[in-house]
Amino acid sequence: MVVSPAFLAVDWGTTNRRVYAIDARGRVIDTARDDRGVMAIAPGGFDAEIAALRARWGSAPMLLAGMVGSTRGWQEAPYVPCPATINSLAANLVEVARDVAIVPGVCLPGPRGDVMRGEEVQLLGAVRAALAPDDALLCQPGTHCKWAEMHNGAIAGFRTTMTGEVYALLKQHSLLADYLAGEVAPSSAFNAGLDAARRRTLLGDLFAERANVLLDLCARNEVAAHVSGLLIGTDVLEQELEPGRSVHILADAALGSLYAAAVAAAGAHPVTIDSHAAFAAGITAIWSIRYA
Amino acid sequence: MVVSPAFLAVDWGTTNRRVYAIDARGRVIDTARDDRGVMAIAPGGFDAEIAALRARWGSAPMLLAGMVGSTRGWQEAPYVPCPATINSLAANLVEVARDVAIVPGVCLPGPRGDVMRGEEVQLLGAVRAALAPDDALLCQPGTHCKWAEMHNGAIAGFRTTMTGEVYALLKQHSLLADYLAGEVAPSSAFNAGLDAARRRTLLGDLFAERANVLLDLCARNEVAAHVSGLLIGTDVLEQELEPGRSVHILADAALGSLYAAAVAAAGAHPVTIDSHAAFAAGITAIWSIRYA
Image (cartoon, rainbow over all chains, first blue to last red):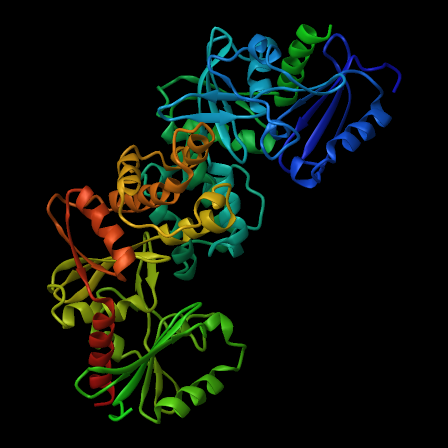
């Protein structure tokens, strides 16, 4: 590495971890991904993890985001309430070692509460980098999909859906597991799943997936795409999007294309944006307040 | 056992098995339940199972119902299409050994197909025993909940919901698993789950269960009842019941009381009936056609 990083950012999730070495202008100069998520770290093991990261990338300040700040992580970083901004995150960093701080998550207080950890950096970074306007609806698909209303550049409110986890449960442990092995791409079977979602009878339609294979009404190799369309379509319909409303989608290309198709099918306007660029912009903004 | 059975009926499911020894008047004179479901029987192992049952209960004819007739069971018994009756089941028994026959399942042909195996005996038996009228909506909660429209005493059509399996997946493998350990009974938390189901935002409401505990908006020990109410409430709402319509519920007392509360909350009229009596009546009617 020719250039030394100004700081290191770690997106430290439950099962995976991504490290970004970033220069003073917010450019990612190196990155690495591994499976050292917080569930893989034994109690008391975080100091050694930091030492290993330092051995590779040097002594620059480190900002950690994600489940590392949860009760299952290194140390709990209390949630910052909505409306949440880069400033409110930076003001509530939790220092866990010399020049190592955890970025707090964000909560939506009741009556129907919600929480996030890690996504807040991407959401605020997307606006900061002008990848999305200051007032926008952002969607981050994943194990737990976040739908965030940005207002004046702050996270004004959000809603989490369990879509990705439900799909994973079905794929790994359910009656439908045998049918859900493959990858899913936009296709006529996926679109048929989006159509089926309009019925709003998810519990019945999931069983019908199996029945339709047994009765030769559906090809086995189309079930994965159909179930994916059914779940993602249901997720999008639960948001009751206004017709034509823009939805900025932060995701990898594969999942982003599925959500874009579902948003379009629901009559809204999908805009896919680069989630890594958004994360880098958000974490650099926090670093510049605290350390620059 | 003083009286010899006229026949033996086995409700042979995926994980459990229940044996009924029944006399010529349809009275259950002995019963036993074990975990010798079809998944516990090695290929080629069914003859030995029958021999073991014969050693205990003698040489009377045996009728087997349930997943034993599926591709994962002993031998496939092709589905009988709706409208299905006691007569059409009896006419399509599959003899697998001397005086041992498998009762076929029932299918609803497309466009949106559905299948059942085992439940058909209870459904037709409920009508045969006058536990439900000839024209009725029957509900059999369980891993896969069946909603069956009976018309002139036949199974005219039905719909399966994956409600019980989804709850089990959440309880065993999900983010919510820690909260779902206990048993659920009708309670204010269960009723609050029924109310939440009216929003028809299941994917979002499931995640909110966790968030509400983290934010101290919901007590940990109320999550199981709330999630149960959310799922059972969603199941019932998917049926779009007419106001005041009677729903005859075939289930054990615990699950039956939860579905009865959900049906009442949806504005319909629950009637709980004895599922064991219904099974005995149905299987006796098939036996009397074939063997009596």
